[in-house]
Amino acid sequence: MKVLRTPADRFDGLPAFDYPPRYAEVSDGEGGRLRMAWVEAGPSGGEVVLCLHGEPSWSFLYRKMMPVLADAGLRVVCPDLVGFGRSDKPAARADHTYARHVEWVRALAFDVLELRRVTMVGQDWGGLIGLRLAAEHPDRFARLVAANTGLPTGEHRMPEVWHRFREAVQQAPRLDVGRFVQAGCRTPLPPEVLAGYDAPFPSDEYTAGPRAMPGLVPTTVDDPAGPANRAAWAALGTLPIPMLVAFSDGDPITGPMGPILQRHAAGARGRAHPVITGAGHFLQEDAGETLAEHIVAFVRET
Image (cartoon, one colour):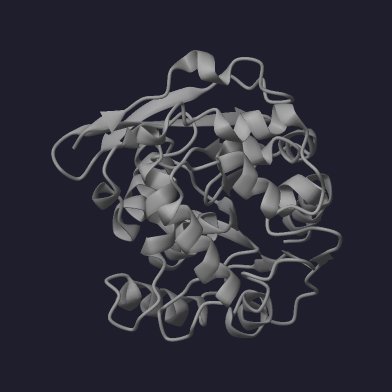
């Protein structure tokens, strides 16, 4: 497996994101090792909030939420998925599979960091990975926060806007990550923030991860990830782990999934779930502080 590593100076001067990166290695699944990065904030003994980003962002996405969560006494852990942020980047799209991404996050969170009583916050692919982990390792989790995400099984067609996004990401001659993030926000992002989203990718050679991820979403019943995701749905229907479904009011991609999670997940039933107003797909950008406040209240209530 050919692996690329973004030069550290690409991350100099990031706005409101001066948390020192931490690094550890996990197996690449082929006998080699991959370096994964994460940042932390808050007291080391606080309840753990594991914030998982999605496509095509990185832990920078959580910079507005980290201070709110840390000030509430929570230990915030924000990893970069393999292929994103400061983590290593396998150079071939075929190196990226749904199963591998679940395993890479599992290895970092449980084998390296030994996290327990985790409050998982998952948005976009962060939820596709985090909900799988919760279903497969429920003893590690205290709470789940699903924010503009889902757990596709291939049995239902994805929205047309998602198909257009997948085609654009896979076929663009040059992947403009900042532009894609901006398209998923309701608020204009300043140039320095757009540059922060572009930072992990010095050239198109580094973009195999974000180019691959849309193609890993199950869209047919015979998708390789289908059986595991269907098993996860079944588990979430009975597991009593408290779940907060905190979706925005402006995400055409995942919006329909919010009510389904509220009805299906045992830990979500009977709970008041917030709607984050004035926010798009990347609600961490549009209303990060508000989402963080809902998470703080959820942790305290449960």
